[in-house]
Length: 85
Image 1: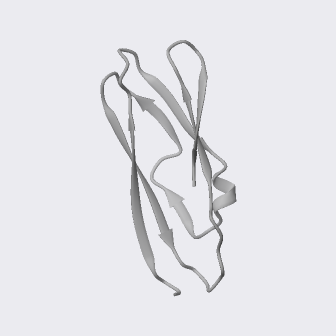
Image 2: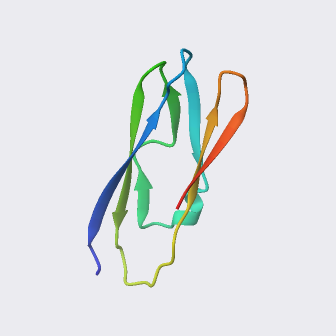
């Protein structure tokens, strides 16, 4: 339904003793109906970050499952990929 809205949250938890950098990729695959509260950032040691994911139907369409990726740079300089669908 046009103008329908929904908000979901995704909690990213840093359980390490070092700050961890993260960023979202693949947001262009979501289309104009979806937005996020932040595209990248740093999570301080032993803290959580809550990412807001927002949906607003701008026009009637049939949608399929949408996905984006969270890339996390760990303290050992390894990239961890998390896929969200």
